[in-house]
Length: 412
Image (cartoon, rainbow, N blue to C red; front, side, top):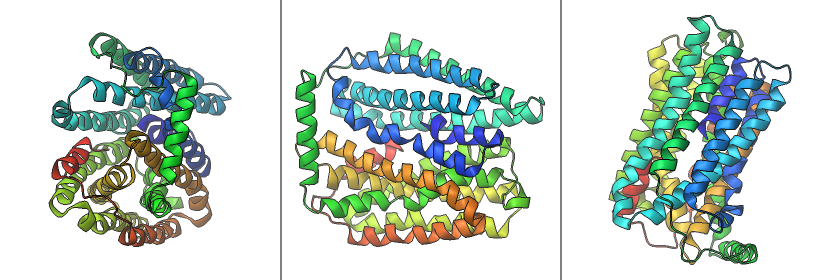
């Protein structure tokens, strides 16, 4: 997911693609994670969950290899976008199957014990792809004097190799994953189950208010997600900070991810201590107020890499802290009921729609307004989530401390 949504944006920036095109295309490519509830029931009907995990990793190996081979071609843009799209659908499908293996192959006690390990490895992937490998392209281009095309060909080939190794490892070590007791037996049964789950979701009390809360909670963050790294890379002559890929990889991928992990862990402890109902507005503030960091950077334009790193890490820390409230609200207030797993998937799909929408429009807005005005707009866009958090309905009991800590430990 990080490769398709974040790393691809940096790659296209290095290759000279405009911010508006980058944000639109990479924002749209997050759609598979929004739509995955629509085909998730079908995965219960065929083969094993392990089969889909390994199969999707092999597909991603092929598609990332296709990205590498397409980069030197004159028509690289549509070819790489097509390959990234297939990668996105394969990754979203692997998410479904991998979660299924985890849930059906472990006891509740084991799930609680290993959820932190699961979160560490999920975030380790973000550090490797958007941190180390982005920095490596900077080394190849700056120190080894390779072209951006060849630098990114090497990195995509590395990602291709990682997928091959993952598939080989999982084919040998991964449990098969048992079938859920309520899994549909045929396509017609799957369709009926989906329609029933879908209709019951929208029959929940206060559902439209809750949907509004879910959609807008990360609205400001969604605008920053694509433009933040591009702002750090763009030359100072057009309002950016003029960093290279080595610095960007360290700041956005490594320090930023570590800041997010720390924020998520502390956010879970905070919610467990105060309860979600009492902490929700504070967590919305924690996520949205730090957006002032990019406003600060775009106006002050500091030269110190240390200061830039600290400011971006602060923003990511706030995102991690506040995002726990978002996940807990979807899990504990929106999803309870007879189709809890499906309703949670619908809720995260609505969250994904916001991410897709803000990603697609952020580039056009930034190019029209310039960085200073754009980040001012982000501050105004961060106000509605705080107001909505204040009026968010709470129709279920607060989560237990154990559940709050589990969400925080997962870190995503």
